[in-house]
Image (tube, rainbow, N blue to C red; front, side):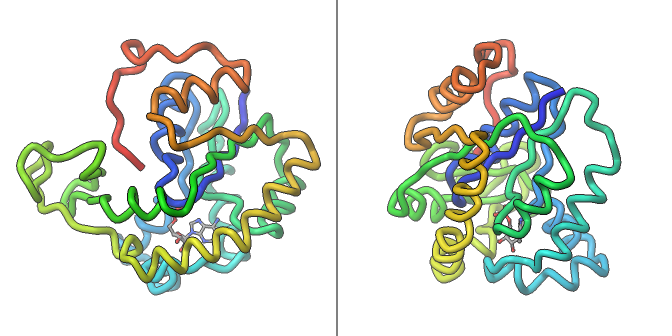
Length: 225
Ligand code: AMP
C-alpha cells in the first residue's frame, strides 16, 4: 500500500505526474479540484456552494474540503494506495490529514511563477468530454477542436490571468507552511518541474525508490494537467 500527496502550483504538472504514477502502480488518483469541478458541472448542492470560489481561483473553506476528502477516502477503493493531488492546501488541512492518515511521501513539484504563467495561459479544456490540451505541449490537430470528440476547446475559468494571479498569491501564502510542516516529518521530496514530463516522472521514481518509469509500458501520452 502506497499513499502519496503531490503538491505543486497550478500548471506544475501535478495532474500529469499523478496520472503516470497512478496508472503504472495501480494507485487511485484523487484530485480535489476535479471533484469540485464535477460538482459544479453536475449542479449539485455542493457545486452551488463552491462554484464562485472555484471560478475565481480562491480556496474553498477547510471544513468543506476536509469533508470531501474524508468521504472520498472512505470509499476504500484504493487497495494498492492513492495519490492525492491539490490537497492539502493549508496548514490546517495538512494537520487534519496527518492526524487521519499515514502517508509514505509528499512529492513537491517546484516551478517558478514565470513558467507557471506561460504554461497555464496556454491550457485548454474540451467543453464536451473534458480532455485537457496545452497549446505549448499538447496542441489539438484542428485549432480549437478536441481530437477525441470534436468538442469546442475552452479556457478554464480559473485559468484567466486575474484568477491565476490570485491563485499564485494564495498558493505561496498557504503552501509554504504546508511544505514546512511535512518537511519537519521528513516526507518531502522536491522535484524541479521545469523539466519535461518523462524526466520529472523519472526523478520522482528515483527519489521515492519506486520501479523505474517505462513510457511504452505505461501507455505513452497522458493529458497535461
Ligand atoms: P485545482 O484543480 O487543484 O487547481 O483546484 C481547482 C479549485 O478547486 C481551486 O482553485 C479551489 O477553488 C478548489 N480547491 C481544490 N483543492 C482545494 C483545497 N485543498 N483547498 C481549498 N480549495 C481547493
